Image (cartoon, rainbow, N blue to C red; front, side, top):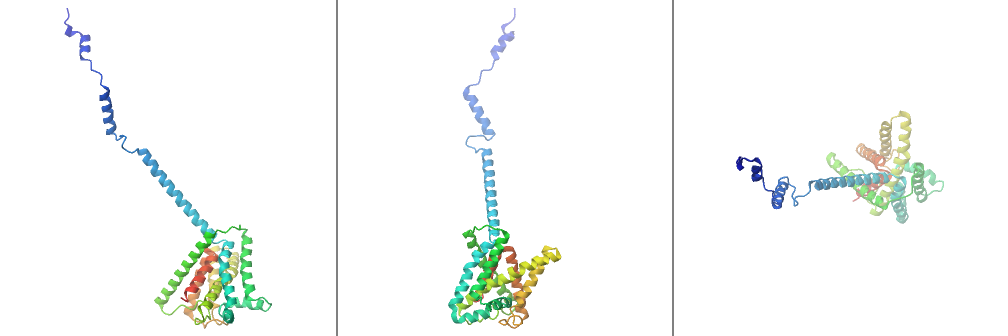
Length: 310
């Protein structure tokens, strides 16, 4: 007869583990979750990463839109019709100012124009075209022909014109400060903004003449001379960069020369320092015309000229 304690079945029933209570199971699960950082009070890592990625995407989108807006502004400022809209108020100021100056009309006719402008104006004036009719018509006609040539649209954004005003004023101020710094560094004084200009004349007459010179000198030396020169030189050399650099230097030499009495009856006596100053200024205006457009070049030219009398 076997002993009951030796019966394996009885031993199994005696040592069988008791099932865990539900409270113990919940406590164990809570400990495990705390061990891996999955507590309900801890932020979801995947959501945090998603928010970071979304914020970076939004930032990239905003930067892209800002870049596109900047490119659009740079493109708009070089459109012929936008340049015309920007220049028209300045043109009206000059023409109306010329009417009200009265006795200073002769002063303006002699002091305002560079040599090429006089050659351009006087023969047509003999045919009965006065300056109040001829030059505005030429300016508007040339720019509209340019607009037609590029087959551009007719929309104009007012904010672009406001931006051009601020940009031209800022560039004119920078150019004015740079010119004064060079004068202090090398001695002497910058030449008057316009050849033959009498600085003792009233500020009103000077302001009108400065505006006129900024418009018409840019029209003549940048649109009428520089653009055809670059086109012709490119045909000759078949090298765009060489054509641009050669055209800019040639036009700048003409620009500087036309401010002296050798070519311009109303010009100054030749002086090497003032010649080099005007030559360098013309190169800057050519660069502005090619990179930023006719309107910005005119606005910068006018702003610089006006600042010289302050």
